[in-house]
Amino acid sequence: MQEMDSSVRPPRRLPPLLSLRAFEAAAAHLSFQRAAVELSVTPSAISHQVRALEDTLGQPLFRRLTRQLALTPSGQRLFDDLRTGFDALEAGIDRLRRPPVSQHVTLTTNTAFAARWVLPRMAAFHKACPGIELRLHASDTLVDLSRGDADIAVRSGSGNWPGLVSRELMRERYAPLCSPMLKLRRASELPRHPLIHCDWQPHALAPALWPRWFREAGIAQPPRALQARLAKGLSFSDETHAMLAALAGHGVALLSLTLAAEELRSGALVQPFGPALDTGSYFLVTAGGRENEPAIRAVWAWIASQAPG
Image (cartoon, rainbow, N blue to C red):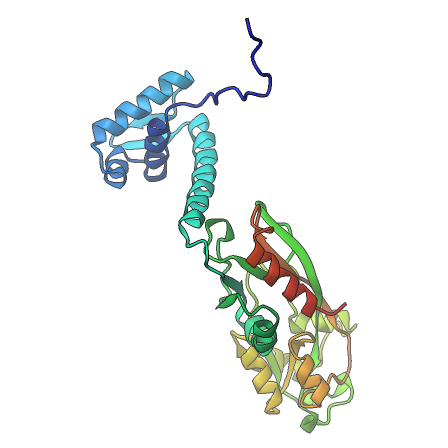
């Protein structure tokens, strides 16, 4: 008898796909009725498939309550794993359906970074990568890269995002910046000028806020006049608008030294004193497994080449 080739992979020991899809839909909705609508079958078909899956696994996946379903601990674990697997499968199929000749790459980043760092470099990008159309998605809300909502991102944070590949791009620091028209020289002169505030996202690791700046500057208790300005002042939801207010001479803002680099070089803004606050790093990010796609690799390399050495 011929010996079987040891390189032949054994078959996967998986339940039928139909029963897994039925369970995942029912678990997502906690309803056989709504799962049936999603999969265009009858509720009894969903119930039958779920029961068959429970028999195969030898344990219940739902607690069937009056007019309601609840997942058992085993059901919750299976649902979490299936949802992750189906999301990855759906994203992979979607990528296969895209025209193979497509060289579109969608870059997502926050609105300030898009306006102040990416857009001024777009002409240089087109010259360096003429065969790629770079689509810019500017939003302060993180998009799901694993689902293919964007191809590549520049994010600030820890760099630790499960399922994603990241590389540190540059450190970021924030400092008090203002127009030279204010003739501000020392921190003791701050009470004479309005303070400009900017909102930070809840997930920010180390936001550059004025109370933090005063602590790191060694000013434990700001003067009473300055406390009033801290409570009032100008406030913006977008850093670009805060920068425009500072350029117009409306006050002093804590701004990114990276994003305000051109204004600092030209003298339109000045940094009268420190300290500069460390707010973490910007990272290049893409979904795991996509980092070697030629178009993504080209955009990745170009963005990395633009960061300070």
